[in-house]
Length: 123
Image (tube, rainbow, N blue to C red; front, top):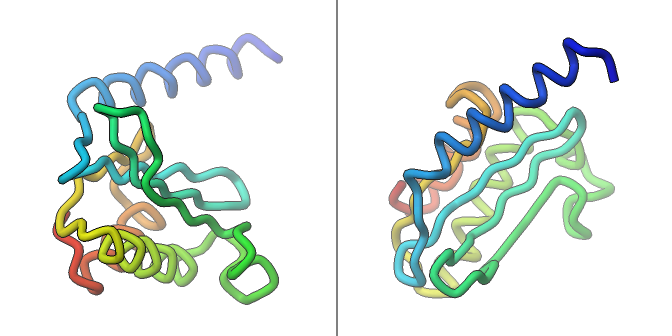
């Protein structure tokens, strides 16, 4: 990697740690972690006390893989937010702590949160 790419990667890692150091999920109110890559979106419900992933969905999961929601865009982010809210409701989870990582709360990240809110999850 070039020097500028290493610098950008370190800055991104520092931003993510700065955000995540203030957030801790519990079994009653887990952390809703959103990770976006160049092609996909991954969303997880994490209980930090026990170190467990309570539920997860992504654009490359089986139910979304070969559909129009299999790529990263706002429409698929909204659907993923709705699906993670359904997973949370099935586990009797009413509210979560939103973890955006190193990304700004904008675009795809905001669409995930809006989709989850539409299905009744309190963020």
